[in-house]
Amino acid sequence: MRSISLVTALHGMHYTGYVFNSFAKMLTIVEWMARQIDPGRVLVFLPAWDGRYYWEYAQYRVSEHLGGEVAFRRLVNRGHELGFRFMPMFGTNAANRNLSSYSAIADAATSKIDGDRMDLNWVDWDNDRHMEGWLSYMNPGVDSWRQWLSERISDVIEQYKVDAYFLDIVGGWTNNPKADMHSGTRKLIEGLRAKYPNVLVVGEMHYDALLAFLPVFQVFTPTAYPPAMQKYARTFHHLSHPAPGRGSTGVHESGFGQWDPQNLSMANPLVIPTLTVVDDTWDRYREQMLAVIEVSKKWNRS
Image (cartoon, rainbow, N blue to C red; front, side):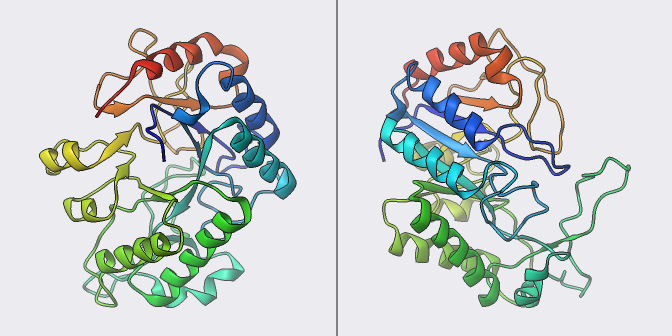
């Protein structure tokens, strides 16, 4: 894969069902971007391509609400013709217990060392001032979950020829007696790499042992073994990086950040320039998008 100097996150559907960008609008945006920058230097990140963000974990099927399979395939195929690379998002360790598919993977739900159920319950998705508890924290060391996730990532790679896949919360680890999470994560990634050697894997955050098999992360963590992080890995800005204008974080639960038009919210020169695109970004803040693109053209880290 050629060196990437810009990551653009085209946000899909929020947990609430609000659509930021349909597949058709995403295609309009990438066709416009192709006239502004060499598409071969751009990685198109697709958060919530599968429907309601987090609620649909872990079905990983193209969302009908965003345009369905035909529109998604058109986006990727046309983007490939232009030279872009695409990266849909998957969750390393989260599954909704309310979905009918959950029964097939229920044995991989994590318990804490004392036996208490461990939920992914640190987000207030419905804004009722109480954290949600419908997501199980899954252990990729358990065969059923690792195989399930591997099959779904494989299916998307083979059906749509995407160029990369993103593993949400890949830096999560807890001491679960069922199986070792680090070992399971390594098996997952190495198994996919053996099948698809030219497909890039990207993780959200890291701990030092992940650097052995994960080359790109979404979060630059200078406190977690910074010499190795700077030497062996590359990073871009987080999913919650504010969009130009109002600073919307798109599908992310944080709502709004603070967009800085002076430095384009890119103060760290070690981080790949990142452009968040939400519902009004292309319509109202195209000049700011162009400013980010111009910075990215000059970005180079050997």
